[in-house]
Length: 147
Image (tube, rainbow, N blue to C red; front, top):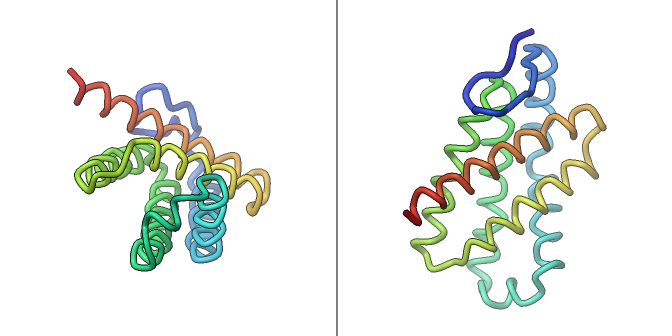
């Protein structure tokens, strides 16, 4: 075991087997997790589904699947910085598309809640640490961009 690499302040201890198994579980269940996450987001932001339209709703499910895959890969390799960099990039893409930062913020809250609900406690806790590190990376990127 070693301290996980990449993110300053990330104190997740890298246990290669634990991380690999958690990443594999998330990757194997990504469609279910992504679907649950997006439905939760639509329930929390009722006008979002209508504002996105049918094509946007379909894209939301596809993008959530990508987000779960990115999370799974970061966990499997013990690299929260990779997930943070991905989310910071995604935040910029969403901003360029005219979406408010709150869209990603709520999406990540729903991701954490979904992982907590649908995964075994040990895997869920590990995944939530990566989501937390990713949110910190997004906040840091937004702060740098505002300067």
